[in-house]
Length: 231
Image (cartoon, rainbow, N blue to C red; front, side):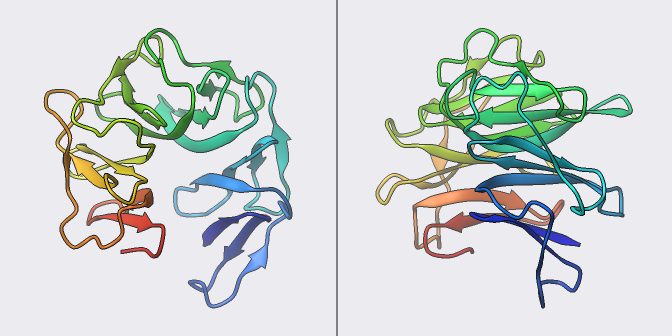
């Protein structure tokens, strides 16, 4: 089953996109979604701008919207972290704490900005489960935390200034972070930065530099979605 977030709710398909049907989340600007299915798509979390986080335990047949504890309802992205046999849910926000987490399926939220997170206009979050590291991107750079959000380090060396960093994806084999930037001149995909080195552009063949989102297929490639198309 595939899910699609739109500017007017969430949809799903069970035939590889040949046809789509609306879920119970039939309205709202969906900014991101994540599933926890282990082979059978059942649990879904959806960030809905202006509302909070919508949760479904039945594959989208019904949803509950949660926002208790969120300092901003302009939620922008979501990811899951394995904590033993449980799931910790992380979301980023434009404003407020910038980032928050939930240990009760999204019903209540706690701020995760800690110390050192100077950018609260955040766009994306990615969890490195092996290193237990959290990566976030924002309008003013890249940050990481190795202690569950208690402290953050600025990892923006080498990135052009005043360009929004729209997303982060982790190379599935090495865990190396790659980030996307949205700018016609200085945007594109950057790699090589983070913990020990400076970021450098990684744009050969990428004809559009206004990149909104990076993703990967779990083991083969990282794919950028640009302003014009997806490569």
